[in-house]
Length: 121
Image 1 (cartoon, rainbow, N blue to C red):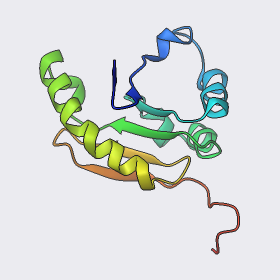
Image 2 (image 1 turned 30 degrees about the vertical axis):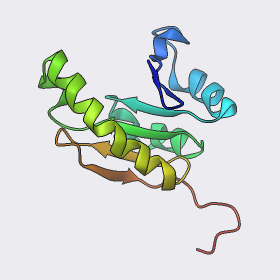
Image 3 (image 1 turned 180 degrees about the vertical axis):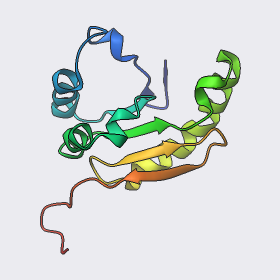
Image 4 (image 1 turned 120 degrees about the horizontal axis):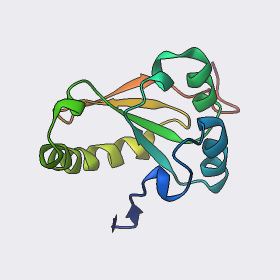
């Protein structure tokens, strides 16, 4: 699916279903221009996985509670509505940051990416 210069690609179109994050994430990161939408909350909750993401420039969006209980049509409709907000977040998101997408469409930061080089801390 492609619109306004943005393209939606399922991970399995590029990588095997069993491919670990450590395999495909560096590839997408090196290509640049990718963000990830996932229901894998291990990335957000497990320090080792979160660290892997935070070392990259890829921004990640997590589907929040309630998404898995929606029927496909409702999920598609709400995700389409949330897409504009996701694109707005991407304009200012720090590389490696993670964001939680609520069923209501509200997006909140789940974790910040690493400090940018040369930034004052």
